[in-house]
Amino acid sequence: MEQIFTSNSEQSVEADTGIIRYRDETSLRFRVFVTLVVIPFMVILAIVFISVFGLFGSDALDLIVPILQGDFTRLDDFLGYLVVLLLAVCVPGAFIYASISQGILAPNIVVTFDSNLGIVSVQRELPWFGTSETEYSFNDVEAIELDTRFRTTSEMNEISLRIRGVRRPLVLVAVFSAQHTTQEFQKLKALLGDDGGCRFVTR
View 1: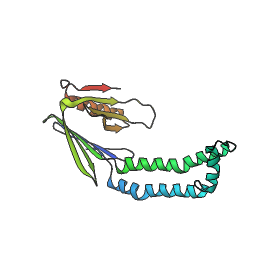
View 2 (view 1 turned 45 degrees about the vertical axis):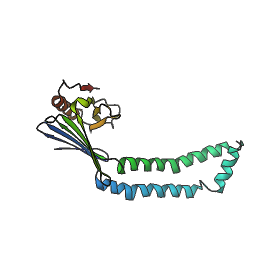
View 3 (view 1 turned 30 degrees about the vertical axis):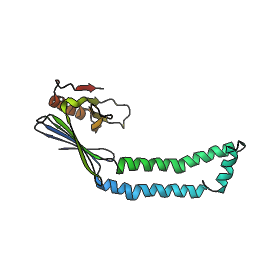
View 4 (view 1 turned 60 degrees about the vertical axis):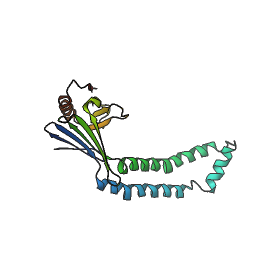
């Protein structure tokens, strides 16, 4: 088994006779850390900013109300207030949203290609919500896409799976090594074959 690590999840690839399995898993330790440390810290930080700058106090109301009534004599002060409000509330809020969606609610995903049965199974699991599994025929696989274009040094090479009737593609592999993704792409191409209607797209 080859272990591939990303920012907050662990990806691995398993290969067996006629079977290729891709895992994208977020550890329970990371989920607990986000829940008990990261999110409370950002909430406290937002509260401290609001308290220090008095963003919802009487001074703020004295600034906002005239603007809403059409008096723009303190427009510069109002714009400065909006900037501080953005930094103090919106940035922590966006960070909390991302932490919840990507760190807590993001499911562990296991995608298995089984050439013996001719199916692709997609298993989604959350530690506190249980597991669901959906199976697709190889004929339902619309495309396997390989993207090795480097736009920035921090971006990864990816292999994505597109299934007919499913809106969003599933990322099977996301690593910095173009050679590794190319090898995995060739394995999938050999496993699925060229006669099932699946497109193999390289970018």
